[in-house]
Length: 590
Image (tube, rainbow, N blue to C red; front, top):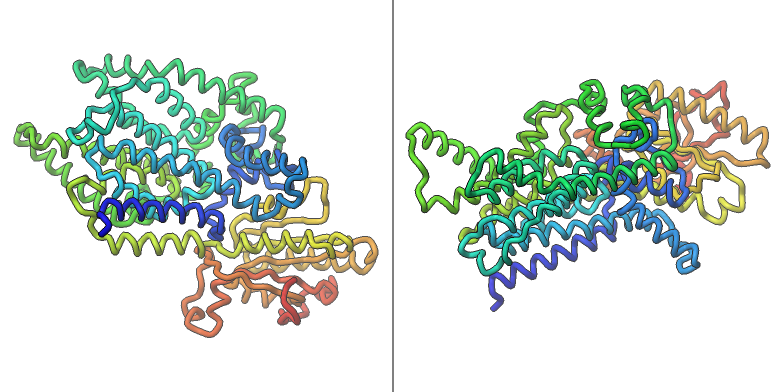
């Protein structure tokens, strides 16, 4: 009979292998544009010389993101791919699959630092390490978010390293004395992590404040005064300063010599160009990041939320029962603390261990509260908090409650965000890349206009088009309303139809519309004739949610799909652009 601990170890190993396999499969869900446009999209343009859309944060006008971490992750991956191709090892190695999966694989491997951190610090906090590791590995946050190229993943990895360092210097419980080596001073390592985290995302300070104060207080336990705590923190300064200089030098070189300038982007950041460099000839990206985010108008462009969104919605959406149980536990601790203050009684010795473990609640709720001060709140901002949450939820002497609910919750989250959410866009780009690079397309000069509407921003690098090529135009019309959309497409189609008629031997023009099925009925009023179409399933757009009544009809498939519609340009003369109804295609899209 297999021992319970051995069963837990096997379960963690299965979930760990599944994490890697599901990255390689790959997942089709598209969580947020930042998973592409803050790392692989930028690096693909810099290293592989592909056509990309460079976001304003990476322009030399006002750089708000460090280039070092993208260079170390997606950049290093693309450099290896480029090198292998140049030496002839893999001639067709660069394609939409490898461009998507290999940067993700890099971050997926980094995510195992969280597992290692849990393994190391669990005995310190009186936690069953294998139960906590199963909670971590089985969470859809780990399986979906931590296998993507988010800067939040780097933030989570650095937070895990910080918690591991401060925990290993903490006083040990009786069960941990034999498991943890002698104390070592980690001042330099903590300084490096603090600076690296701030350059990656300045919000890292919200995650780091309680661990650093806890570490400083525990190392000055004989004289826990503000002066001694400050002196302890100052030990981090030399390593922190050296690390900051490295980031500043790398960013300065990158944005001066590599980053292009786009004067139109200044309107978006709402800042004068004089803030481009700090002070005179150095790029200090955290300064620019803070300059941008302290202006309410800038944050409003990304969406404004209630201050309670993280606590009420995002925490529950990401962590489910674990978040709710931690909130209940925190409320009990607060109530007990208030009662003790009112009664002027001190806690008994037998309460020492529970009070010690309650520090984990501070590690979870203080960053959540600090992040809630900002009006722009997205679920992915909280993913680093999974580590203190699973540590709190797996004490040594207790069983994990609500197991069935936890499993069902994470299964649902993995399906929705890993497969359904904007799930047709990545396969669609892969199909378009194949069409553009087929031998038939290469032999017959063609120009492709790809018009995306009511989808997330399409990452251009997945089309694998070199910068010098002029055969493809990508137009992102986002959530344009029906009337403006019809007018825009009519103008484009009429112009392309004229070119095909006047100079057919020069280049044949093709127009494709990529749209979810929920918007397709609106296109029928535009009067376009569809030559070919193809459907990608599943595709769930929360911005254009499916119509409930249609979901229960025989047309339910169209509500959960993304379409590629190739327009028949010859049937669209300029003066009769609205004279035709949308017709069904004669053959599938090829």
